[in-house]
Image (tube, rainbow, N blue to C red):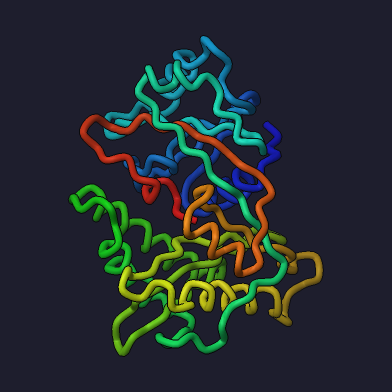
Length: 278
């Protein structure tokens, strides 16, 4: 299956570093075996939005491909660049939450070299592991399942750093990590991950400083082969959000919208953080 969306191209590039992707011709199966509860790590990728009357068909396909005893969600993400939502009423009647994201790119990122608070620097692999506490502190849900999700996620991030596939950056106030993000290299593109800042430290220029520091290194690395030089950085945001406005001021521009649908397990808070932040 050919994919057009930059969001999906980079998402699949991320997925293959941790799990596996199976191409069925008319759809893709994405699996993250080490985290069956990762809603956007175990999903079907469709070539386009479902047509009216097709939702039950794709739910059955999901069950056939990913119906393991420890997978209790259903996630469908379809290719496209305009944010087509498909049969909204049918999806919602089946229990799905629709989530539209804005895909933004930049070939230059602006940020303060010295923000008014916080020391900005690259994180060591062990510091990447410790960033779980930052993710937990800003989370909109606090339960054992989500804590496990975050722990598995930072373990994957640490592995990417050790393998030379990613860099993670943090801002510190003394010994406390107060903001962080990652940048994962995917050929000539690089995708940001988990842009997060403690509420008390927001609106101080930390996020833009981190965005710029990571991009500066990615664009400026002198030991790259010309064929694999990073040309653009990619970030995903909720349309109209404060984060999207921060990214726009830093030099990002929106190029597409993408929509997915997740039927969360009963009693579980639907949270975009379980998707794949940024």
